Length: 522
Image (cartoon, rainbow, N blue to C red; front, side, top):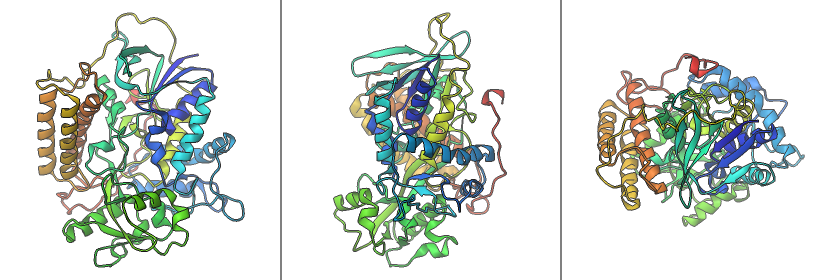
């Protein structure tokens, strides 16, 4: 039996914790806020999985590869898609019910990039919320010890073996060092790097930043997915891809349906294509949002209750008139490099979900593969966390190991108020220079300005006793690393668009990339 510490309580973390406990491990799950505050709760689109006999795993694999700009690992994609039916069966067995059609079968939806209707929904567009409620109920009834409102400060390493042996946490009262035989990071993405994002406040990349400081390998940070349609109002609430899957169309302010000329699949093209097309249409009309017309969807309010509530809260009636939408940062395809069982390049450290990079998404994630990813790889990691563990005392004091990010001593105290102002500046820099379209001049300027900010405040969070300040320093580190990765990749590929590429920014196909069985062997 191993002592397993899971950091993050979304679908990936909850699945990893539940399966690890079922296998007999001693499991603690830590969340920065309440269990219900993860990004999973906001997922509207559903779960992509093959459950219809007219569909096939092979078709799901090909759709995923195509959406990824053929930059995904086919091996990883095969694992993801082939495991889908079993993970859906697990949810059914745990009591979760998906929306049904009039005949009693699953009411399958279609979204951009899919060639078949294979998206399972619950509560219309409330899939994430209902999924999290089901997982939380199971966690409360399990042997998993849940610790809420406690933030990750950093990973702790054995100074002799280099193995991760625990974490440093900041709770409501004080800091604490927690030992573990295996640490599983499931901390989600870093959508809060950007001015416009569909992500909740907790999405500050804490696990990826901690892994960087620990010396773990990361990759593909330049691949940031921008969701094509968020309401163009404060907070940019998400308008699900499924709305376009049910027939909604995009119009410029003159009422013209511009996607017909952009891609054969029009509004159902892959997300990166639709997002950039919207951005171009906005640029042509002075930066003003485009329109999403869903007025022809008969059961709009009952099919999409969450979106309807957001639209009404903004003062609009989308059953009668089109609503204004804009792209917004949505998902991090890159992250901590792992193998197909969640192992990282650092012994004792594992990662799953959005903070991990298995190679499954390549340069652009296929719609509704994210919840599936959390279920599949959260389940898989639980079967390997005990293999290399082993209880016992450390041979010496914990080493916090900042070798990969030597940081200056802070010259400016980072109070909560100062952290808030700094986050706004980071978000502006990233949106303007490391956003939907990039070039060398803007990326170089972004790296320089973010580096200046980092030098002023320092990047090592140990002196801080404020979660907002810790998050801000994580965002600074990830902002710099994302801009550096984007500068290094000089061609356009999937969600990474270089306006200064030799061909003017056309998205290039990529050779198939297979993932090594164990990243530590690379």
